[in-house]
Length: 143
Image (cartoon, rainbow, N blue to C red):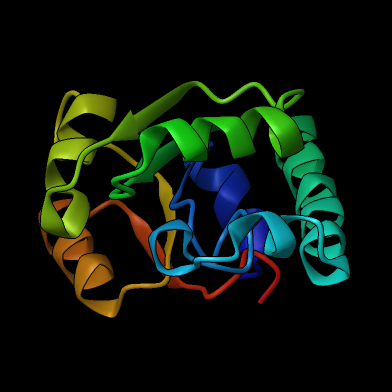
């Protein structure tokens, strides 16, 4: 099934931040300000916003689940680049595999959603605990 149809079927999309909404990891970049203004980042954000607008046009909701320990910087980046995107929820928690994130977003493990993350182990855990989810390995949402 084409990804657009899967997103429409599940009606809810959950995204990680690093290497999904921007092409880097906040904690591991000492030159973050220079990277933020790079052509690569600006092009990535522009294309990602187009994808988000298509998801929203389908009537879907979007959530963010992040293990980022620098919440302040992440929120600054979200405001700077995606301030016009209506995320249903944004959950920061340093716990591994994002299980706490999912329990905050979804009331039951029977919830249906599409999940995009760059961590294979996280995807596996989510898929096994949320059998109605569709999990995708993505180093960017543009893969």
